[in-house]
Amino acid sequence: MTSHDTPSPASGSPFRSGPTDRDRAPQFVLPLVLHLEKTDPPARTDALRAAARAVLTILSDERSLGDGEWAAAMRDWQDARIRKVVRRARGAEWRKAAALDGITVTGEDGAEVRVFPPIPLNGWPKELAKLQVSGTDLDDPEPPAAPDLSGPVLWLNPDVDMSAGKTMAQAGHGAQLAWWELSDTERKAWREAGFPLSVATPGAERWRELTASGLPVVRDAGFTEIAPGSCTVIADHPALRR
Image (tube, rainbow, N blue to C red; front, top):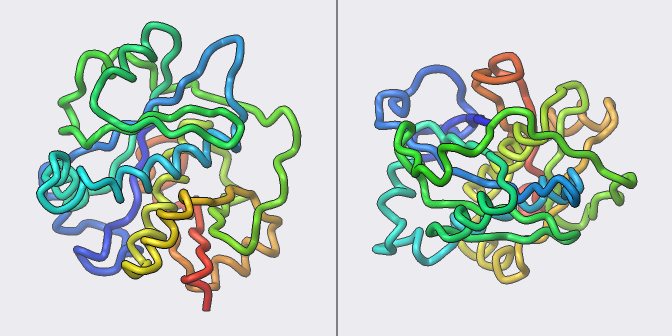
């Protein structure tokens, strides 16, 4: 499921919407693939957490930094619109995807998401191009545990209905916005802790409070599923709370 967030600090406010210089840059996409077997699908909330952690993991990986082998692609991707696409794979498809250069992140309850270095928008490798985009949906077999409010929380808009794939991309956006806003010391502490985070949907009143809190907000470009400018995720990290 394709999704887009607002620009990073490199082009001004990361929360600014509307046309920017990023739209004139070559466009790249960050692929994420969810391991989804018919007989044992992951829980929705665990898949959302794993997707967010996968984005944080590749952002902080040494191969993405400095002169690392992924660094140029990561810079090109972040200089353009921040695009993420979530696809699903099972069986042999998953094994082929897992053999490509990337990182697999496993959720607390076993959800598996593999993230790959950014690729040109129309430059998908054949092993990933054939994977399905639409129709990825998941359930939580039991009500998710309450979020750990002492740590980072990605809050989902209770009034926006999205497929699991779309929501995974949005959770990844929220994690990335939080990452951009942190200092190097705060990033290091989060990374060394293993990127703990919660994903939760607040009640209407709490959502209104969060939208007025000054925390990073993901506003979707509206290319799929939802209206342009929709606020989908608020990235709540202890270091960003005022």
